[in-house]
Length: 559
Image (cartoon, rainbow, N blue to C red; front, side, top):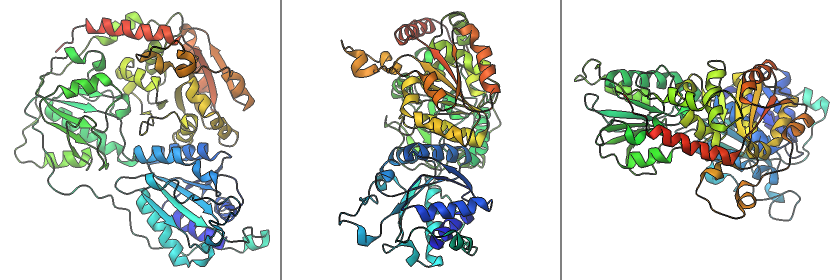
């Protein structure tokens, strides 16, 4: 246990302030050490019984902070349950620290209870896999444990950030007495090297702001502390170039940034943009097949800038990629002595807002395009929103309008799974304060154990459940099957309000769109987890989306 305390204290000195603890015996020394640090006020400790949910909770907190949150599990299948969150942390380039207790080497590969090859489960997606001494963590010196902590933190926040696993063997006896625990001491302060994220070497690629171009901003995947510099750089380039901006709500670019084109996804083919324009792409692609097809038709140079992600982000194979981040790229452009003052170049505007408002009134039966259109207008400005990585994130992109950019929008699109949806939102709300989650019924049910976090954390989270009786996104795909519901939509018979109530969560049914403003006021006033169920018809909504797109194609973009 002294070794466990030394390791956790070393991580705390690196910057770890939060830890999520899952139950187990082999992890007992880590649990007791975390309890001691929490009692001293040195560590914020959260407990969770489901390792999969716990890892997503930690990932949500880490994303909000831009700093790793640790998860502690026992050995065996507990470690396997960390894989979905580790995959998402890898692809969304967010720091996550996984501390997995293990049996010592003498108990491996001999049939000992709860002993598996857990050191291999997470390795393919981790930035680094650190090992404790095979004989047991107590065999290591304080200096060796400090080095393990330093390396784990460095790789977690490296280039790019991501998940790190420390697999930590513990020899028996595992559980110290209360008297022994009271005599334990933390490690001496360690002198650790600062974490430095290195950008790419070589020349910084250039674009010509004097020539026509367009900016396509996809989901933001940097660390939270770097967001303001990214936003400043985006604004300054748009002012300098006068280029139009096609932004995803997940791009974290404010609505008042110059050049914003409202409703661009609905009218890409009719926008008066030259096919040989330069294209500055920020981050991964938005969730739009129409945009992918449009980019493939462009003949001008395309430059993709990522926030520290050296791996390829261009499935189209159209762009040169530079991973040094937009702020560094803009700084290099500014230093160009040939740069001229800002240009007064006309930007694109659109009348999509008037078209959608006329066809999506705030009245009558609830439908998903109307929800995506009205929620950004009805929710308080700056209130952050998390969108489930299915229909909600696509609907906000298409129907949300510029008001969708008046707040920070999150969606974990690294691997685009529905795993951990509720737990991720709980983690975000714990760090950010009041937050709204917009999710479908299957995504919420898939992570219903996320409701368990409310018992001890009570984050101010309002969940808007779009209940379309199954996987509504499949209704929008060209799937023909006589067994569509059984094979694709998979509707469930669970009552989501009753399930939430079983966890102590208050909820309400919203009958019609007219009732939405009052329901939102009620939910946000709770100050703790609450649920609003909004029933929709996925078949009718799929038809409505097609009708709206057809109407949008007849609308003329304006210069």
